[in-house]
Image (tube, rainbow, N blue to C red):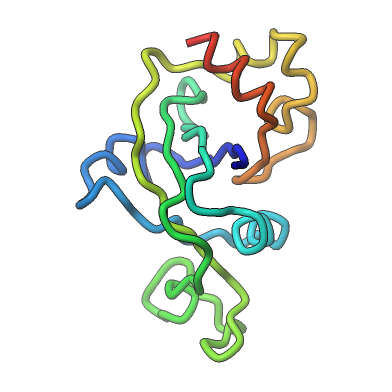
Amino acid sequence: MKYWLMKSEPDAFSIDDLQQRPGQTEHWDGVRNYQARNMMRDDMKIGDQVFFYHSNCDSPGIVGIAEVAKEAYPDFTAFDPADKHFDPKSNPDKPTWFMVDLRFVRKLKRAISLQELKLKPELAELALVRRGNRLSIMPVTASQWDFILQLE
């Protein structure tokens, strides 16, 4: 099993939105970064654990846990001209973009803010706190995962 952190702006899609979806499951669409796409397409497997991170808000931070419920498949929003994630270069016969399905596991007992994560020397190598890393999806080591859960 692998561990991940996936960012979403709460006004676009929040942990509450995931919890309220039928089956508490939703596809994670709209990723338009090749490195993040490759992680979803090549590395994410059913059962992998995901920190759900609220970004671009008053207090960015880890707010919940989800799990990969379905491995990568073509992101159909890339083919829909009416969708904000439309990519005219993506071809359904040879898709460029992929998505996974996530299932809600639980909310954290409290949000763990980015500010708090940055203060922990044990997390100095966490991609989220390293300068210049703005990916929406990033790997988390097992030891980082366990440490963050202890902060809860």
